[in-house]
Length: 398
Image (cartoon, rainbow, N blue to C red; front, side, top):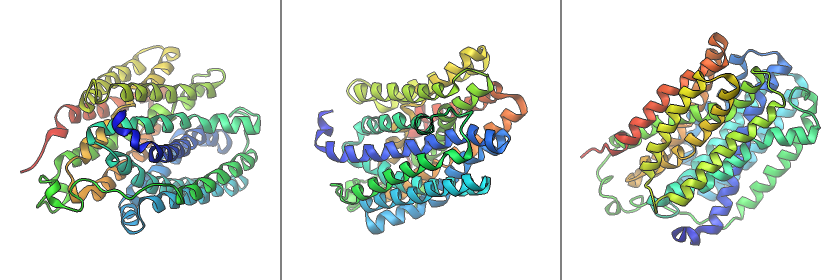
């Protein structure tokens, strides 16, 4: 950790932002069963909540890079918080009007804010220090993210003093007014945060990154393109690991289903701690990615083949397998991009849109074959990530 000590203050601010990303994502997980109960939706319809959020990454990732280029990282981060406030404010009239369309619009705007924030914080934390320790820094940020994932369910239950089966549309005013006040305050704090503008090697001087010199397009970087594909499917299956456990527990008729939302976040946090301790001193980012893909493949099989009461714990364990994938894929894909670093980062942020498509497919599969069998969808995607871990990141053009 010695190499990252001088970045402690910036990392604290960035950690706060990753926490916000996790909290906003956790709200999606809460709304899936909540809207099923209150608006009488099918699984396919309720998973549109997640899709509406993550489709924003496909639409706004490249405009986000333009915002960063124009006003800088810090002001872009601050802007994202104010956009979150607008999005969360829309949830209140959506509840009073019982409007699913307005819920989807609010989720989409939350996704826009999330896109802009992640377009800034992901490359910032990656290039803030040495590239070979980027997975460790991202793992630290991941702890902040994962700790926030389960909080919306716990927070709303605490404020309303009701479990999810009892919360009605009219109960959401108070918790969301508190959330709105918090993100506005964070936006103001970020505007004055001590975050310097930084650049990656080769962004200003091509001689600093010979591999990128002379290249004319992002498509001349196969390791980036394949990394974006790996990230696309990864975010989709990560969402299944993190956001479906509450829905699955309800389907199984388990008592106090909200308590199961704690375990995916714990699994992610444990994996991140392992990454912080081991990378790069004892294992490389690549080795960590390989190990995680093997665990994910085996656990995916366990989810569909074990009894349901055991399977629910396998879903929670899947988050441990996911934990070091994102921290490893991102620096492997962004390495040696030079002057294309910001655009390459935007492509990777766009890949987060996988969180829109794959949960939708999962919801449709769940309606067709049931909750447990629907988790078969994870297996081919983890095998694709395994390919990137062994071969894809190595591919370079002359």
